[in-house]
Image 1 (cartoon, rainbow, N blue to C red):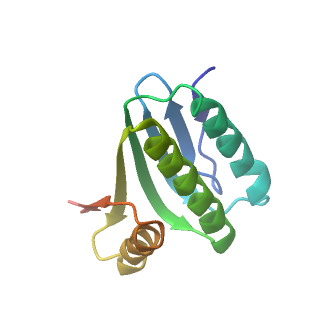
Image 2 (cartoon, helix red, strand yellow):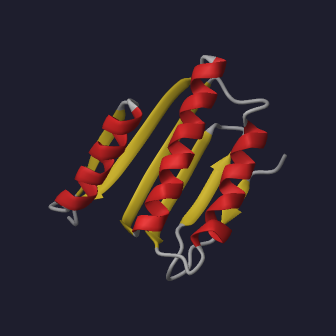
Length: 128
């Protein structure tokens, strides 16, 4: 199994899922033309990763914007990671980054955390 790396575009985020470290990174903007086509390979990769997960899993989400269809796939990704962590007794950390003053993005992370019952670390990023 290889790491999953997808370079960012104007409409899709940078993805770096490192199986060896157990650190998964999503960064940028998520408004893909075909959300299923973009996100489904991530979910399939995660199913394969679940067979031999790390004892510690960290998901870093640094999105400056995502659309509604992306939010559905992010929700599925969070659910998969939570299940992997629970089933394997792995330590799970989710780091939700948002720009200072971006209450909408901060609230989106809070909503995911509340619905999924997963603790998030909220990290405010300032422009300075």
